[in-house]
Image (cartoon, rainbow, N blue to C red; front, side, top):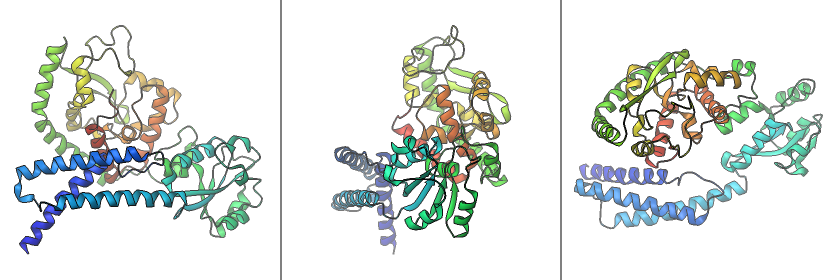
Amino acid sequence: MLMMKDIWIKVLVIALVTQLSLYFNDLYEFKTSDRTLEVASRLVQAIGITSIVLAILYYVWPELIIGRWIFFGSVLVLVGFLVSWRILYSAVIRKKMFTEKAIMLGDGQLAMDILKEVNESPDLSYDIRALVTNGNRQAVEKFFGASRIINGFDHICDLAEEEKVDSIIVALDEKRGIFPYRQLLNCKVRGINVIDGESFYERISGRLLVERINPSWLIFSEGFRKSRFVRISKRVVDFLTAGLLLIVFAPIGLVTAIAIKLDSPGPVLFSQDRVGQDGKVFKIYKFRSMRADAEKLTGPVWAMEDDPRITRVGRIIRKLRIDEVPQLWNVFKGDMSFVGPRPERPFFVEQLKKKIPYYNERFTVKPGVTGWAQVKYPYGASEKDALEKLKYDLYYIKNMSIFMDLLVIFQTTKIVLLGRGAR
């Protein structure tokens, strides 16, 4: 019995290391644009990383060794499984098997945004069988086959039953005067699901179309529940984890402080006003990565790619995300959480609130060291980027949960270890 238990522990270690190696090499992500050579290269890297990590573990704990040839046999099984899975999955997507069939109403920007998202992510498992327009065919023909574009809303139900669809997506930019209430009600009572386009876009993209949704949609939509359990759990986890990590990272912090002091004149820590929950301003702390007089002549500006104000040590600690370590103190104090919208400076907040709809709603939760926008959207520093990140921030606030926080932290770990997105 003890022998069997020991074997399962060894198998678990191999499986865990292998799964993490595959995940960090993006082998669980499927993109139709992936080339065979690129996938093969990532697979070789994953096997190499797995071998190195297991070799280190076996050196430290020799009792974990399961058998001389078992690992090599496992590699052959792994390669065969991954190659077979990707071929099978690619065939399933191409043939649109197991997809949810739908027809969509609309020919404006919302309809084009949905079609673009579906076309770029074929593994979403949605098959839009036909597009019903109000006469503006040309706008959507570049995203949709002309033969499947139907003019007029008079026979929506007949079309839905003919195509054997599960849902009708209502993606009309302007509903006043043209909304087919009677036809859609008829479809609904006949058992066909009717979905509004904004909710469908949220479901497939992981973000909210803030420039298109109206206040009534936000008021009546599901979500935005901040239960007492979630709020208390987040605070307890933030407090205990931040306290532990402050102790763990103390040696790294000391080495970083010495390097910053030797590299350029100025303080080791950089503090700056940021806007937190309910619009309260607090001081955020980072290790200084720019010259001490970085904004003396320019005033508040966003960071740029290859920013000349960044010091030599600053470039390294930004790449490794070490400059963010002092924010653990902000989390420990309660100004921030580990997961939430990134805090912005008051100067930019006042500008963005005037130009971007619903920007003020991001301050209903604590800002975070990392967030849904940070793992889903590349680094950006402009008003356009602020709008795109707000779409993800509002999605996070709408769907906030312990599970979503764990998902964000797991993806953040991958991004940090692979050095992606730093600037």
